[in-house]
Length: 129
Length: 236
Length: 258
Image (cartoon, rainbow over all chains, first blue to last red; front, side, top):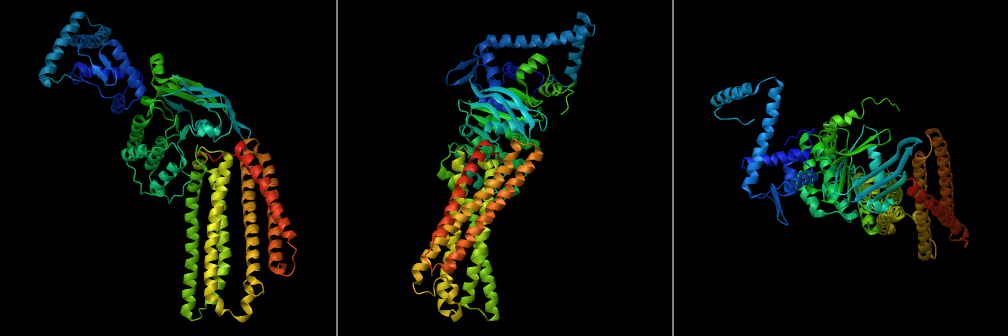
């Protein structure tokens, strides 16, 4: 995959895995590929993957089983919280960007409603970017 | 983390012209390190000094040993195969390596050769630049040592070969080994680097972790590297 | 660390192949030229023998030069110098690999010589028998053995000295760059070349003297001391040169950069 070389790679790796967990590509309790395999898939250094994973283990979204590998947490609540956290992060930067354009809170809400309605009818529910 | 390579007060000149001086460098085990610098900055010379093939002043220690002969047993360097006649086949060259390097792992070579698509019956003269570089990488990584030195493995080769080579590094580099890869164009290898070492003005100017650079400066590695050259007024 | 024996095998093999190319080339010349003479109707086994006895010197010389090139190329190529083995072992193995291949080439020449000799011996023209050293003399076989043994020893010593002189000139001129500026390098190089030429002249002198002495006077007088003296001088030169070569190789002798 393509990385933004301005942002620490381990943060970007975490983001990729978060995304897969929230969208269900990686299910609760599912085993992650081996570190080296992940490094190969992402074309990054093994140490960088290791750093991303150990931070995620500390955060509690991954659990490490000795000799077996790394697993997505079984704790659905934790994944739910992760989703909330990701959504909040996106909203926050989005909100700040619109406020920077001098939009009031009401204007932001109405423009979002307009946008979603038009987008929904145009490309049939494709809201991924 | 333990120091794998320690260089102290290293200097080197040719024809009484200073090429490197006052080089101090410590590399930990288990890292991929980018050795950067302009053409002629002394990247290859530093690698040759580490292998013991270039003879400078100062101490170079690899995992506790420091004589050139002992160091050679701990370092695998990308040799450009100029010692072989162009009529020799890939398999004959591999046989030579197997014979003279007790740490050469034939099994690992087979895996690498398969992954990189090398045909043992091909003659050296018939290889494209990319294939020749792949062969060099396969031979270099098939030795089981502590330190791997890859001297500009990506110069002048196509992007498909480059990807293959990068992947074989990720896949076959032993966990505790350190790999130093030199390049004058950083962007293509930046995502796989733990650290960079920049050589400028005949010495080590910068030695820093890549994610630390991204974190602290908000720059990509290429920009950061170019930044080091901006405003520089020295000519020599 | 690499074992000397492994290195020896690795160094010998390509040189062995090259020696066989020389032999193949020699046989090709013999076959083609003799088919040609047979076609013209003047083929004799004696002419074949004459041809072999002159070709063997040419081929040995070509082999010598090729092996000298191998000796020097091995030291300058990083391919070989990255091998973890002590410099002195490297040096000895390198020369030994060349020497064994030269002996192989000689052995083949000897076989050709003996073969063609035995085929043509009975067809020698009366006046030509003296061309085979020692054969016309009364106590032929014994003298022949001594003659060839001495020739072999002197020849081997001469070749070793020639190779080590080439290496000396090569190493010293190449290493001068590591501590001298360019113009002083030229000065040093000139001196080294002069020394090289001097040793070569001396060497040729000794060998010529020995050969002349052996072939003309060996069977009449018993005085061998000058041959042994020559051998002693060569051994001394060999030891000194080898010591210098090893010192230079260890301290300054860098292979080419890639």
